[in-house]
Length: 382
Image: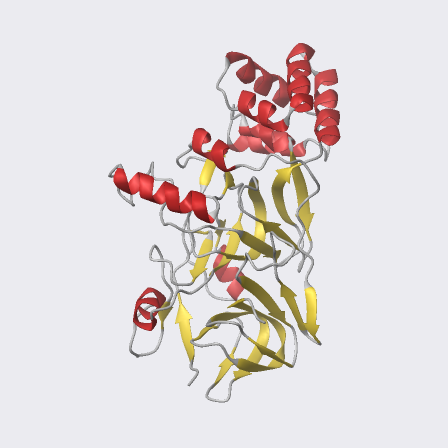
């Protein structure tokens, strides 16, 4: 028997969050403070809570009682300031890192702890509104060199830019290592780049990041990355090893059930550049956009894959915009960000207004009636 169980959670108040950001996305009264992320899942750091009486209190307890893991963590994200330069480990790297830090006796709550769990954290993000902005992956070498040339031409110290350009040509990894080395000439390069950056769209980001994190070499790493702005419904796929940073905007994020983040800069949080270096994929290329696939009228699927078969990623995100029937591949979580829907299975029904969230506690055939935007996180379907 399948149940549709109302759930909720408290937004995480990270400093980069937009004031009332999550509440605004859900159409709820705000807290008056930063609201960065709403976690919807079973992760023990912030499991979603049921709002009705029942056999379990939160999804971590459900996961234990059901003896099955929820294969994803769903988030509503609202950024007013840049997040850290970061990447996530592979399953093997996560398991090894978690075991290593456990053996070293580092508490899970310690600031310097890199691996909070033994799981990977590949993720996708779908823009809720136009203007979601992100850095994602290393851009083609020629694009980076063109940007360096433009800055060098405007700088009083072009020799610093010439060395950076040469390293990029040798290999993106060499340039990355040098920028994060802490060398005196890197500090001088950061100052020169900030001073020389033209006040146009191509270099506006330099001044913005310098205003948030003065002197951080991540400002220049950002210039080596793809800078994209998404319209509502457009998406990015960020597998293990992809360097990225969300800059501003509201999105729905779906990922593996993990909080393992390796940071390299642009943050007051713990930075471990050496560990970040071990997980990064330095292959340059275009932005990793994820194109949704039509499932049926009024339903599209954001289904990522790191391999041609797609079997290595066991979650997907459905977006329902009108009357539709669809199936889930696992227990699922549904949240309405616009409009209203009735959601039915053969065993249960629920009426969902904007901001309502339900947990579907078993794989199910679902019928949605209504209009708007209903996001459904699920394990991959057959």
